Image 1 (cartoon, rainbow, N blue to C red):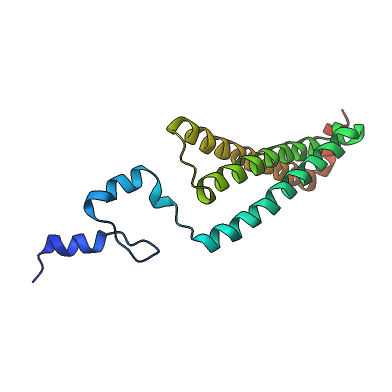
Image 2: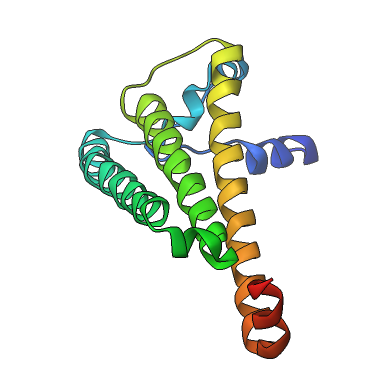
Length: 159
């Protein structure tokens, strides 16, 4: 017969994707080295790396193209909507670079960096996606004002 504490221990024992459970002595060191977050097998690594090697550069080039089109046209640069769209494109350019590099480096190549480099990569991804979402929010607000109050919006933009 099991005691109450043994039953609770069985419930909280982690089960990994490969069906194994870590022993008590290696469980702490396993997660300290971030090994418990590396859950991809060989097939998944190949599929995800091919997707990242295709989608990352394509996203980068699309956003650079948007930035070049807006920068080359003086009429587009004067409109606030395109200022927000260019901000979104710039943030997405950084996001595609940071995320693709950090994701492939950690999950596919199993690169183990020091805590400072790891936090720099994590901060870069967080900063880029926060900037992207913020720019998207400003673009949505601009479009809402353009639709909700078109007369006021047009007068303010011509000044």
